[in-house]
Image: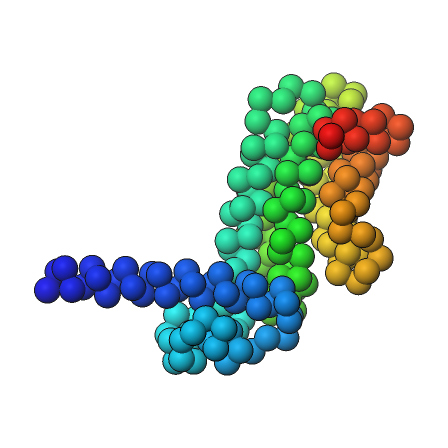
Length: 205
C-alpha cells in the first residue's frame, strides 16, 4: 500500500511539473491561453489541471513563485564574491535579466492576476540583497543618489519591470535588453554613463 501511495504521489508530482512546464511555454506563446489549451498541450484532461491548480490565477501565481526563485538564485550568483559594488550590481542585473527575460510575459500576466503588492512581497529577499549592495556603494561613494538605499532599490525594481514591458511592447530589442537594463540601473545609481557602458560591455563579452 505504501509503495502504491508513493507511486501515485510520484505520478502526481510529475504531472504537476509537466503542467507547469507546458503552461509556461503556452503562456509565452499565447498570453491568453486558457486552462483547456494548457491541458490539451500537456496531454491531460482539464480535470487533471484543475486538480493541481484551482484556477488560472493560481497556476500563474505558482509559475511566478518559480520565476522569483530563479531570479533570487541568479541575483545571488551574480554578486557572489564581487567586492566592487558597481560590478556586483552590473553582474547581478545581467544575471537576473537572463532569467527574467524568459518570464517577461508572465510578469505582465501576473500584474493582471496577482496584486502588485503580491509581486513585491515575493521579491523581498532579492530587494534586500540589492539594498545591501546599494548601501555599500553609497557608503564607498561608488554610487551617488539623493535616495537612501532601500528607496533606490524600489526604483531599480520598477525600472526593470518597465524595461520588461518595453520589450513586450516591441520598444526595446530582446538581444539589447539585458545590457541596456544593466547600464540603466548603474546610471540610476549615479555611475557615469561612460563608466557604466564600459563595465557592462566588458562583463557581456
